[in-house]
Length: 110
Length: 117
Image (cartoon, rainbow over all chains, first blue to last red; front, side):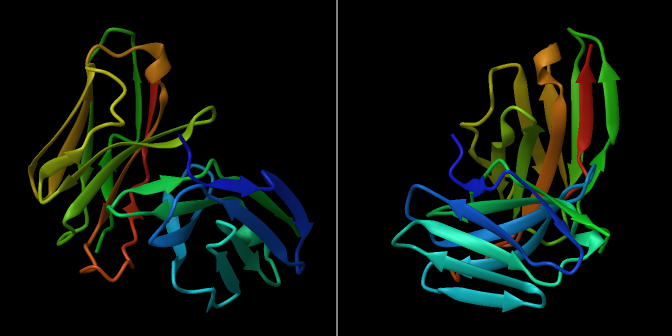
């Protein structure tokens, strides 16, 4: 069964706007990761946040983690057409396994 | 580094045929993962290896699926006999153990799109 659930499942915005994606999960974790998948390609790691961290930044990406609510959000600021992709959250518990959500499709219109 | 390499990129076969998917992980990585992605079920972990040893194969759907890792630079996923419901994109990923710092990330190959007619 899927651990993470992204919300919304699809988002369409204009270039320059911010995009926020949310992820909820069910069990305790060691870290939560966000990946991007362009159409017809493999997943690419974006950012990782450990369970003892609350916020992390990487370029135009900002991720937050609330372990009490078992939720995370990914914010992409000043979006570009090239950000159009599917975004997945993945949780890692006590092993090397990652459990992925079903993904969220982001469309950035030029 | 060339990244994770998978072959073939596309495979079309008929029901009942044997299918073999291949993966070369990133050199030096000690974990290898096989995933299957479909619209209905999303991304599912099938099996993963550590230092060439299978650690968890609980995601392998049934006995028709088997995976091997004869050495650190090569793994195969075999489906025999194949069925139409096996049609999916199969990804291989590799990672390097971070030594307990909880910063392990996975590097994905481009995937093999399998169509079983």
